[in-house]
Every structure is written in structure tokens, then in C-alpha cells.
Image (cartoon, rainbow, N blue to C red; front, side):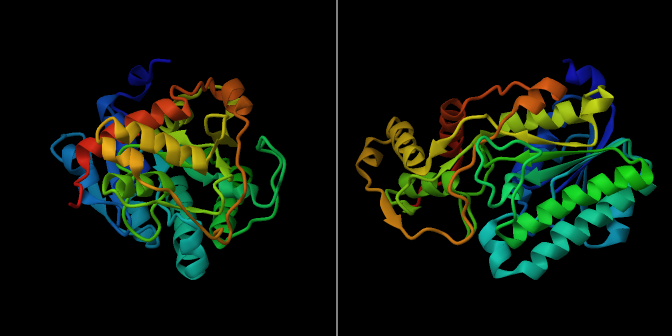
Length: 333
């Protein structure tokens, strides 16, 4: 599929555009010739993530909060598409502060839907989450079979899907939801209380500190490299099959890796840059509240309706991510 042909000169709003996934999307869209507006309040997004984009004549930064409906309306004006990535991620964060997670992830989401609908946006693509599968034990995860949510965060992301469905039925407004499975890659923040496991382990190992695995390391995840996520967003923007619209899709690799295996692979890849890392010990702690033991996605629906084929298996993506971190992170000596 020629994404450049279809997206050149299209006006696209990326909410949360200074975040990990959002900034990668902004960069790719600019390369494809789109006119990109990034909306971010920098609560979790980082200015350095978009520093290299600011000089592009096709890039506009809007500083604002999706909890403000007027900000959303202004950002959606004259836009062809919206890629809604803005959210407060992290299960532990939502357990510690469910109110703010709900305000951003539910009220903010609804504000964006209303603003996009009123502005005549053609299609609204949003970041859904594998956390929606909740306590469902069936593997692989199929889009039509979900359980009860296990965290406030999971509830907010499921409510997004329900709102999107209702907006099609009530207003004939087209959406596509992408249930992200443990996305990792360049620009993912390794610091902070809610850092994801891969960048967190990377920075610890680079500093010769022992990473701590929650539990015995047997929990597994369908870790998904950022380039696979970008591909799914591009397909969601350009897919012409009407049956593909107003659906949710697993955005994953369709394979799973245990946390213990992740730690060992990271040690191996990082040892190529610093042999001492191979001797760093891996520690084990208690299991984290709200954690699902295993996640594995079926990607058959995405393949069938969207033509999706992952470009990166887990280990390939991990190797690329490690190189990016090694080249871009400062080691605290």
C-alpha cells in the first residue's frame, strides 16, 4: 500500500503527539507529506520527542489539555483525520489515582469525539488497550471475547470502545480502535515511577544495576515494536474497505515472551556494547496488583480486514530498541 500517495497533504491531528507513540506517529506522517498538528499538555509527553519536528513547515504544536473541550474543538478544525493517542497510561497509576485517569481517559476522550464529529473529521483512530481483556483467560485474545476489567485504567479504555461504538450508531461517525499490546521502542521513557518494563530494564542494565522482575518471571506478554503500531495506524487511516471501519483491532505481533526471557535477551544485546552487563544479576520481587498473567493476541482480524503483517518480530524490534537507547541515553557513571 502506498501510504505516501494517500496521506500526502492530508491534515492530521495527533493527540498526545509528544508522547512515545504519538511522536513516532508525527514523525512518520511528516515523512509521508502530511500536515501534522500535535496536541499535548506535556504531563507525560516530552518536548525532546518532537524537537526534531519543530522546524518542519508542516508541523504545528498546540499546547493544551483534552479535558478542555474548547481546546479540543480548536485543534480539530479543518482536520481530515484524528489519531487520538492522548491518555494517562499505566495500570499502577490508575490504581493510585483513578479519578485523574478517568478524567483524562474518559472525559478527555469524549471531548475529542465530540470535537472531531462537530469539525467534520472523516475518521477518528484511537489507542485502545489490551487491558480491556481483563480477567478473560482465553488465549490468544480475540477481539470479540473480553472479561471483566482488572484496573481503573482498563475500565477507561473499555469505555472508549463503547463510546466509539455509540458515536457510529448515533451520529454515523467513523472510528477505528487499536488495542495496543505492550508497545516498546525508540523514545519510550525509561524513567519515572510508571516506566514500562523494557526501557526501565535497559537503563538499569546500562548503569550496571540489577533489574527486579515482579514474580518469578513466568508472566508473558505480546511485546509489540513501535513500527508495527505505526503500520496499524497508517492502515487505519487509509483502509478503504467499509467493513474494516468501526471495529477494534489487536495491534500486536501474535507471539509472547516471558519477562524472564526479556531480561536475558536485554542482557545479551546490551553486552555487545558493554561486556560487563552480562554479569549483572536479575532480581525477583512480588507480583504487582492488577497484572494479567499472560497476554497473547490473535492478529487474524487485522490481517484479514486491514492487510496487516508485522514488520518486526519481538527480538528484531528489541535489538533495534536497544541500539536506540545505547545511542541516545546517558549512562549515570
